[in-house]
Length: 396
Image (tube, rainbow, N blue to C red):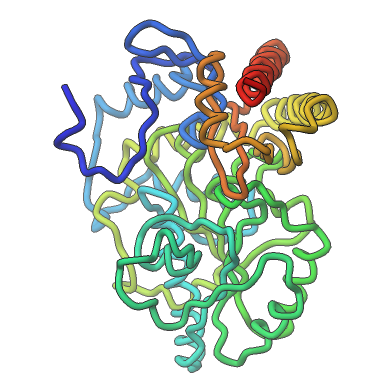
């Protein structure tokens, strides 16, 4: 086998994966790794979690797919679960996070259209953000490396500088603004967490101006920060939210959540999906959400996050020549480096530790939410070994 017939859009690491169990991943050659990538914050319950495996088996023997022209009991059950534990009143199921973002953007614009304000189409995002790879999503994030070569920018999308309150306030007060979209904790952008004070101010401004607040919690939601939803730390709620990744524990599923008011324009025929909300995905989603939202899992996230943060700050003190900053929230941890982050990822892989890349020359640690204290200690030990190797390379 070779990659010659695969479209060359990925810069893949030289690692052929074979199987996983919990926090461990094995290559086809039998090499064992401690996986702190987890499909990029997706396998929240680790690899091959028994409850998810059983959910797939049970549902696969009954029904995989049926059109959305029929009622799908699993959709109704999972939507009930999500609304019970969130701000939302209604849910639209998708197959991915970027589809959930697309639905969120359409929902926001449709809301203002339904209110007789069809000119309110402007969507404001932030530098360093990532909302997926569909056309609307890349324009919402406006990262030049993702938009270049795909034609002119889409009408109505604008980018703000992260942390610049003055320009954000001007966007709120623009009479044509439909929505502000942001990740409460950026993932790809270098694990930058918007302050709780700023999130509360955004909610106040949204209420004052009629602008809708869209939170992209595809990566930072579903328990990743130590609360079920990242925005809960600020004590506020969005009008619309996109989720995915951990919602299926690795199985493709996403969802757009909204209040009844925000979704008022999403009437029959306004949106749809062939595979979104299929019975197989719904069965896995119910099993995953039940586990991730449990008090035991959330308590473990806070415990392990506290330990990892403390230890990584200790490494920062001991390796000031290699570590610039430790940031993020919960188990969405970013470490800003002096050496090239891609090279350091390879160095860590040589030490049996898998970590993800990120913007601002960060590497991300995204372990499963069920990581044990012993596994966390191992992750720190391997990270330190990678630092030693990087220091030795720099000195050579």
